Image (tube, rainbow, N blue to C red):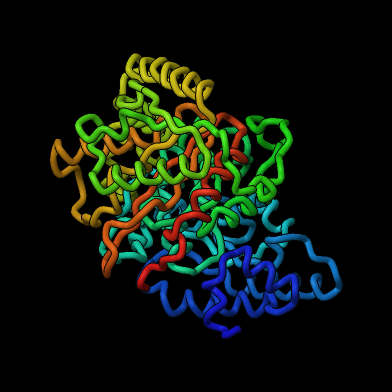
Length: 475
């Protein structure tokens, strides 16, 4: 295989090559580092590239594999992680000037787990400042979308989306509060899984909202996503919010068989008058539901009226929680925040307690409604976003009431499962056009808590019976 072609393999394809000793981990890492050097000046997807550390880890992986100590499908695979996840001896910035020089003294549990699986860390990925969800707020420059450099790669795991879609890592980790895994996956045409809350440890991850934050994979294929979540999932005694429940072999769940499985189309989020969903996205999701039906699933419509308020609910909760984490920074270092972050934090600081309390009560009602629907169907199906990735707008501030309202409305698509704590996955389901300049469209598949295997099985079955995953961005 040509050196420059290695990054274009899926993580699982590369794993097969490494296990058979047809490609070495050292070759894989060098190929990715070369591509990062060539391409990332356009994408701004990395904050820190750990070239020396990656080379050392690759040499160790190669030596272990040569001795017959192959650890599994991530052994020797070059990965990257969002820069709010602690890495011992490597700075963890949260995309902020305030944390630009912070170097943790221990790894996050998910990093320990990746290393135990033999993965090689290429570096730390760009993100919206403090995971707030603003695409232009990183102190290290705004990450760009590989499908169109003028467009938003999705927030707040901006670099995870950009680097994975741009073939600058084999798979990546993001963090999802209000949709920060699924949004980048949608905008960049990837597979992004928000696991069940408590399925993956958040120990030594800078938080945004303790009762909602979740770590999960952003990958190029469903199989890559399954392999990545298997490596990081499980109970962690260091995180009291993780659950002591068995973690299945997610890769084994990818049977391609969904006969008899019940799929619920969320009516409200497919209604343009209610949700603002674009016609192309709506058509793509409905066409995807027809594919699932032809493959043996039972597709029916379900109603979730409260999802139309979930964007406001989650924004009230998360903005209040975020600013409460480090109030001293807002008092003492407010000028070191990006302007948009500062405005958002100051707004969060002014939300009255009774409004926060009401939002929490409404959250319980949304959760009840979503879980009630999931008693009637196995998975819920809907758009991940109302349309394709929008253009980046670098003008700071809230530019109009319409813009602010649109941001809240978009939150309705991903917030229901964040508020519920249920697993939800975004996957490509079409493109805006067939020719040059086409942008990916995405649908979301959500399931019962701890039923990631079912969600992945539906996504894999759809992926393998459609052509969308074969298209590459032009970068």
